[in-house]
Structure formats: C-alpha cells, structure tokens
Amino acid sequence: MFRRLLLMGAAMALTLGTGTLVVVSSTPASASVPVITANGIATCSTLAGAIHFNPPLFNTGTSNTETSTIKVKLNKLTAGCSTTATNLPAGGILYGKATSTITTTTADNSANACGGLATSRSTTQTVTWHYKNSAGVTLAKLTPTTVTFSGFDVLFNGIGEPGFDLPQDTAGTATATGSFAGSSSTANVFATKTTSFITTKCGKSTGLTTLPLGGPGTVADPSQSVTG
Image 1 (cartoon, rainbow, N blue to C red):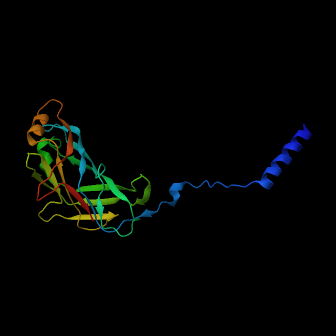
Image 2 (cartoon, rainbow, N blue to C red):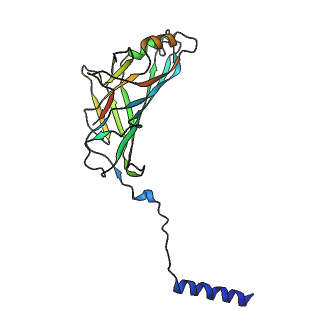
Image 3 (tube, helix red, strand yellow):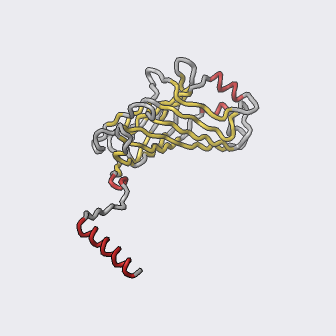
C-alpha cells in the first residue's frame, strides 16, 4: 500500500510538472456588472399592470381601511424605454416595474367605497429597472427610482376607460430620487375596463378586487411614464 501511494504521488507530480495549471476564479460573473445611478430622463410608452384592492371596493363602503396596491410594467414587452442618460453602457434595453401602495383610512366605513377611486391623494412609486442587451445579458444594475406625486387627476379616453394623470394638472408636483432623479416626472395610466364595468362590479356581492391597467390614452394625455 505504501508503494502504491508513492507511485500515485509521483504520477501527480509528473502531471503538474508537464501540464498546465488552470486557476478558476470563484468570483461570480455578475460582480463585473456596474451599479449605476442613471442620469437624464427615462420615457416609457407601454404600460401594463393592475390595481389590487383589499378589501374589495363596493358602491357603498364597508370598511374604515382600504389598501390599494399598484403594479405597472414599463415597456416590459417592447423594445424598451427611451432614455437621455449619458452614463449607461451602450447597447442596452431599458425597462422596469413601478409599484406603489396607497392606504386609505376613514371613520365612516367609506374607505373602500367605489367613488373613492376618483379622490386625489399623494402617491409614492418605486421603480426597479433592468438594463440588458438583446441577448438578455445585464449590462448595468440601476439604482431604483422613488417618485413622489402630490396627487392625480382622473380623465377618460375615447372608449370610456378611466385614467390617472400624475401629478394633478393644477399645482401638481413630482420629485424623483435615485436613477433619473428630477422634478419633471409624469405618468398617465388608463384602465382596460370602462366606468360602467367598474360600477357594475362594485355593485356585486364580491365587489371590485382588481382593476387591470394598460388601456390607450388620449392625444393630450398619452399612456406613458416619464421619469426624470
């Protein structure tokens, strides 16, 4: 046995002496991807998502607390958002996801009344970004954006679908921090259901639990998000 171990050791020494020693780094490839706070402005013209209501909305409210969770994809299924950023690697496709949560509290059980959809309130959105090439390889990790809108207006497109115009046209303000930081951010997002549909759902025993978003905008207020 001792002789066999000596022979094995000699064989290993010979292999190392005449072969090529390859050192494999344990550092993941993602470590080389830069983390960047993008400058400039990002404009996304394809929006799709939904508002989720907990508890559901009814024509007559039944709760003193209502939580609305909004999730909107920004150009996820298209060629990407356009951007004026000058500090991103070339050849990337930009898209993202905007999320926000609005909590309404009342003292008369009207928090989840359907009519409350048209009530303007401050909204803070967090946008997580992806920046990849056409092969799906991440070129940069972007710092998330936080946008605070002072409120919103409710408007309608040509087929009766309501939309939300952020910030409101009169004395409205918006401030973005993180990537695409600035004070000129806007967003217009429209439902894919008509007011008649919403009213009917709010009148049912199950109420309105989800309002899909992604309807077409108008010429004056196109469906788009501008962050910057």
